[in-house]
Image 1 (cartoon, one colour):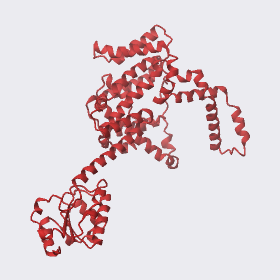
Image 2: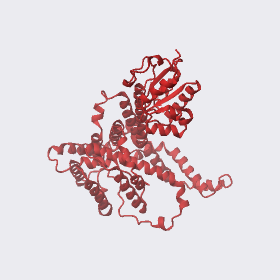
Image 3: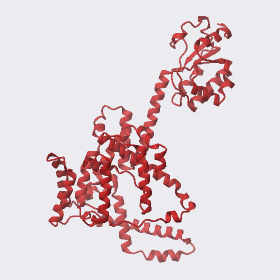
Image 4: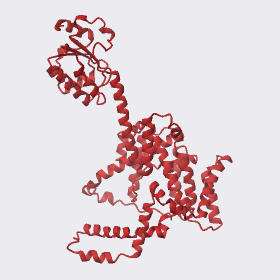
Amino acid sequence: MQVGLGLIGLGKYIKYIPYPVVSGFMTAIGVIILVTQILPVVGYYPKEDVAFVEDFKPYAEEVILDNILKEEAGEGILVLEDFNQTIRRAKNITEEQILKESQTLASNEASGVLGTLKVLPRALNNINWLELLLALGTIAIIYGFKYVTKKIPSTLVALVVMSGIAIGFGLNYRSIEEIPSGLPIPNFGIFQDFNLSSITPYIFTALTLALLGAIDSLLTSVVADNMTKTKHKPNKELIGQGIGNSIGALFGGIPGAGATIRTVVNINAGGKTRLSGMTAGVMLLLILLAFSSVASQIPAAVLAGILITVGIGVMDYKGLKAIPYMPRPEVFIMIVVLVLSSVWNLVYAVGIGLIIASLMFMKKIGDLTAKNSDVIPLNKEKAWSDEINFPKNLKEEVFIKHINGPLFFGSTSDFQQLMKQIPETATTIIIRMGKMTYIDQSGLYALEDALAELCGQDKKIVLVDVLEQPKYMMERIDIIPDLITKDQIFKNFEESLIWIKENVKDIY
C-alpha cells in the first residue's frame, strides 16, 4: 500500500502542510523528549517502585481475568454453561503473573508526557544521584566538546566517555535493556499459504497503518528539511518505506515509519546525506549480529542525557519567537498541534491541525472573494469601463451584477443576497461572469436557486462572458438551457447591449 501511495504521487501533497503545523509538531517532539527523559535522568523507573506498583494489583487481576474470558470466547467456551472451567483457570493465576501485569500497568500509567508529570513528585523524592550525574556529565560533554572540535560528533564522544567511566570504574549503574542478538528466520509461508479470506478483515487496518506511517515519515522528512535546508523526495520516501516494511514483514517485523527523534540525533551528529541513514542501518545490523552484549552495557542515563540535548535542539525556536508577531489564527493552530501532540497523539494532532488550518484558509479565501464580489445596488456599484455608455433610460429596468472571482462554498451566502437586493423596477438582470474563473457544486446550486427565483419573478437573465468551467458546470445540471436559453448568453458586453436595446422596454 505504501509503495502504491508513492507510485500515485501522494507524497507531493506533504508540501501543503502549513508552517504552523510543522512548527507545532517539531516543538512537541522536543517537549515529549524532554519530559519523558526526566525519569531515566533521575534514575526513577515506575515498575520498580514497589509502593506504586502495589496500587495496580487489583486492576492487574481484572485484566488477567478479562484475558481469560477472551481466550475462552475464542475457544468457543460459554462461561454461563461451563463456569467451572473459568474458575479453574482463575485459580491458576499466580502472584508472579499479577506482579508482572501490575508492573506493566504502572509503566503504562507513567508513560508519555502526562504520565511522567503524574509520577514526577515520586521521582523527585527518589532521585538516584549516580544516574543523575551520568546524565549531567553526558549533557556537559555534548555541549562542551563542540568548542574543542566539530570534526568528531560530540554525542559520540559523550557516549564513549561516560559509558567508559561507568563500566571502567565498575559503578552500580542501570544499563539499557538487553538487546536481542541474531536475526529471526524469514517466514515464506505468507506466500505459500496465502489465503485472501484471511487478510480481508484487516484491509482497513492495513490502510490506516500505511497512511499513518506515510504521514509520520513525511513529517519527519519535513523536519529534516528544516534542519538541513534541503529538500526530500516524498514519493521516493514512501516507496522506500513500503519496500522496507514489506521485507521486514518476512522476518516477523511490525511496520515502522521514519522516526523524528532518531533523525534529529543523526543530523545533530553531523549526518547530512542519504549515506548517514544507510550507515546507521548497517551499524544497527552489526550491533544486532555481533555487539549486542557490548551495547547492552551502555548506561540508560547516558542515553537519556543524549536525548535531553536532542529535545532541546529539535524545538522550533524560530516559530516560538515569532508568536507575538504571528497572526492569531496561525498561533492558535501551532499551539493546538503542540499541545495535542505532546499529551495525545502526534499523527492525530497533525490531522486536526491540518483541518483547522484548511477551514481557516477557506474562510479567509471566502471572505476575500466575497469582498471582491459584493452584491450591491446598481446605483452604488462602480461601473466597468465598457458600461459608461449604457442607456440612461434603461437604468431602472436593467440591473448589472459583477462577479469578481470564483463562486464556491465560501462565498455562496453573500451571492444569495442578490435576490434580495435587485430593484423591483428591474425586469432584466445582466450577470457579468468574465472574472468568475471557477464554480464548485455549492456555488452552482446557489446560482441555480438565485436564477430560478429570478425567473419565477418573470425577470429576464442575461449572462455575459461565461468562462469554460462555469459554463460546463451549468450545462451539467441544465441551468443552460432550462433556465437560461443560449440566446441569452453573450460573449461580451457589447453584444448583450445590442440585445438589451432591442428587447428591454423603457417602463419607468
